[in-house]
Image (cartoon, rainbow, N blue to C red; front, side, top):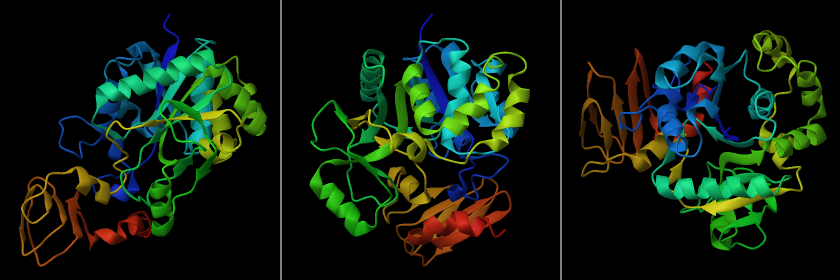
Length: 348
């Protein structure tokens, strides 16, 4: 049996992409870039040369289970793990790890968000294979993939290393999303990398870390450790999950670990987490506008205009703005203010 697994985290709602991404059909199931494939489909296909289809797990909200199976028909019902509510990435990963341990105690695991872009897949495969090989020979290693920065980005967290060099290096520290001036110093220093949110480790390493740094979480799941991989797993998760602390794997484990490593990679990565990142990767007209749908920009420049099929729009006199129409919802704002979208949506 192949001991390599892939866990795809697909439970978010992508509120920063409102109105395209909504509760009933979130970002990971959309083809925002017009590639003909949803984000989750592209993620699955990206890892498929490295991991057999039967060793994939998707952790998602129970409401999205059928959507996952529609987009990934290669998966069986039991490969979609359903969270009864959102509790951030540490409980999500713990749930998947316990499930994997019930099938393969010596597994090595790659964990990835469902909704990222990678444009150089051969290089991606090389980096992930290098990481899997490393954690399989270093049983205590916790690895995160760092991305070589191309600009002073304020929308990503950063990974710091003491000495930048090719290959696998220890992590010195993790940094929160910086302001612009700090991001410029990170870029100039040459030893800071974007935190991709992609992790690689052995099941032994991550379970040891959970027991050391998040013992309350382990205590909750240990109560039903013999139920994972059985028909009683879901009922147990439904009872226990709401008791889990809402905490990310970065805060809960990676920032505390003494055995953390990174590979500085350059495989055309973006989390496509905002309209601005979409603008960066979209095709532009002569005025720098990225237009999707039946829309005509007039005397407008550097705008994102995304109009639902069946509707028409004329956008006049705008500069560096966002106009998006989907499902009877309209958003018009400056692209510089897009980080506020998720807060505005909460007021609806």
